[in-house]
Every structure is written in structure tokens, then in C-alpha cells.
Image 1 (cartoon, helix red, strand yellow):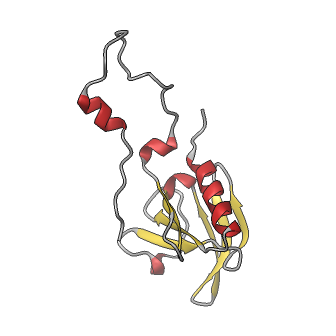
Image 2 (tube, rainbow, N blue to C red; image 1 turned 45 degrees about the horizontal axis):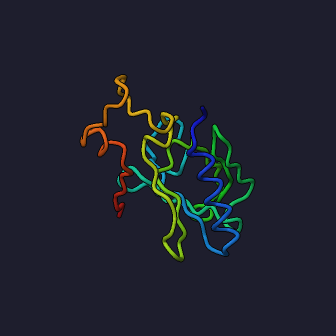
Length: 138
């Protein structure tokens, strides 16, 4: 299976644009393959406005997110792998989606707890490990 993060980014972007809101990406600027203006990086992260009015030639592909934008009046080409995106959210409402490492790879089929013994229930620790993990990023 292919990673689901690029699909979720595209879907959330489309939903925000259709709702008249301004989509932003929170990006790990230290991730391999990220090309962003270093002057705007804070604590290893950068927030990018990817609304249609702020960027040109936006490409939300499975292997790369790229676009042209202006930073401090200077045009710049931005490129990054979808795996570097930590979150996509709306500036106006704050609604969006946080991502973690699990969003980069396939998940086991339902009912597969990684346990080879049929009929055995997963431990509480294994159950906690599968729960979504959300955290506030300031």
C-alpha cells in the first residue's frame, strides 16, 4: 500500500479551499528533501500558506509538494516531501489534521494485532500503541 498522508493533505486542502478558508502547512524544515527559506524557519519548523491566492503552480503529489511563493517580496520555489508535513490546518478556524509516523505507511488489516495466536486479545499496552496520538504544537 502507498502512504496515505499525501491523499489526506490533498483532501484537507480541497475541503478548506471549498469552505473559503486559508490552508496552512506546518512543516518539519529539517526533514530530508525540504527546500524552504531558512530565514522563516523557527525551532526547526515553518508554516506555509498554500491558499490559491498565496501560491502559484501548487502541486500536491504523492512524492512531492511544490509551489512558487513570495517571502519578503522575493520569489522562491518551495519543494518538500509529504512526509515532512506535520499538520494541515485552516488559519480562520484552526480545523485541520495532525500527522504522525503511522500516516506514512500501511496499517495492518482490521483485526490484525500482530499476535500470531488466534483468539488471544491484545494487551492493554498494544491497544494504547494503536490509539491516535494528538499533541498541541505552538
